[in-house]
Length: 130
Image 1 (cartoon, rainbow, N blue to C red):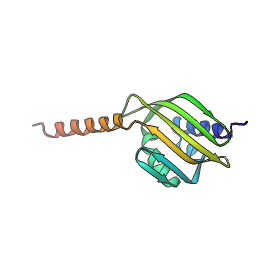
Image 2: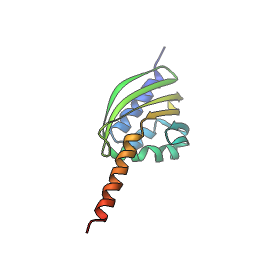
Image 3: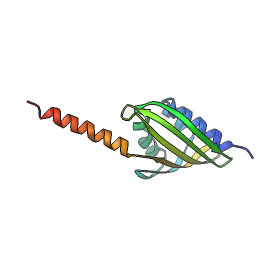
Image 4: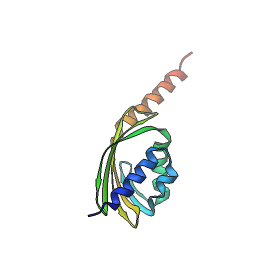
């Protein structure tokens, strides 16, 4: 058994974890389908729009575990962003012809939502000061 999907998933992970979204997207098929907490995303443009805000806020990402075979791979990681101090996540991908054709993201949106709400609350409080 080979691990072609794992090799692609790790190369993709290392690219976005290093802040190079363009390099990461070279591993994504144009007609990718992605299931993520916000819903189903179809096509590379929707995928970029989903991933770009996260990568632009990324401080670091640490690989926790990865495994896979020729067609499917799972990568679990923990990340630090400018918005939250800890953001664990996982992505399961299916690979065909050296590119990711299907992706399933799993992560907790609650810390991001709480941090954004706190920022809005802080701005509102500052705006109401005399």
